Length: 241
Image 1 (cartoon, rainbow, N blue to C red):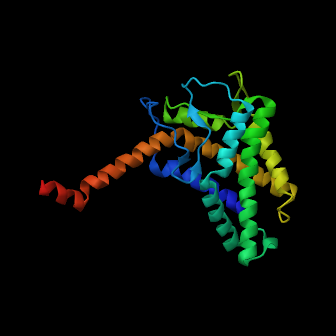
Image 2 (cartoon, rainbow, N blue to C red):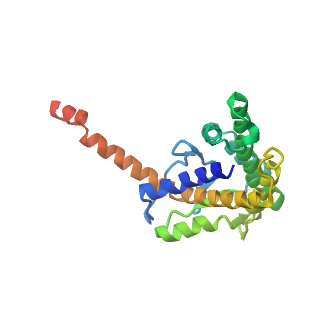
């Protein structure tokens, strides 16, 4: 399970580094918020820091959690990570073959779903905290990076004040404790601490990706347009005119 979490973390960290995300002080807020980042990472709880938004009701918080837990992208991620677990024989007690893959698929999906429900729905409702990620957009790349990582420990209350992010930290710990019921090979204290650390690292990297996604998307679109302009087909169509 640790290997799968490290794989998820590595992918999230690699994307901004590979594309060279930079701060953009002139980024507008006209973009419609994507529900998925790069088509594979769910993004149901991101909004702009400058946007005036109404207070989330308990039903609204649970709706965000449910959206992340049932988005089709989660099932693609689950299938991929279960395949890695099958290939590396993670959690050996699950065995191999169809049954082994099915168990890995089910437990991996349970990890996603339970964590989302706990950190975005249950604990924000109980503690009156806002589970949304408020994207800053403005400032240098370094300041936005620091802000994104800090949201792992700081969140907003329903009244708009900053508060320690109990929902994230306690919610993750709760989902990890629940997972011990279906991971018989990894119930030691040391293993749980390692999994918890990796999960928090993944969530911090996820915040970074949410913060810089508009910048990355613009960069990807510019590259796509540039390729079209220099492609042979484009040249032929231009000469025909």
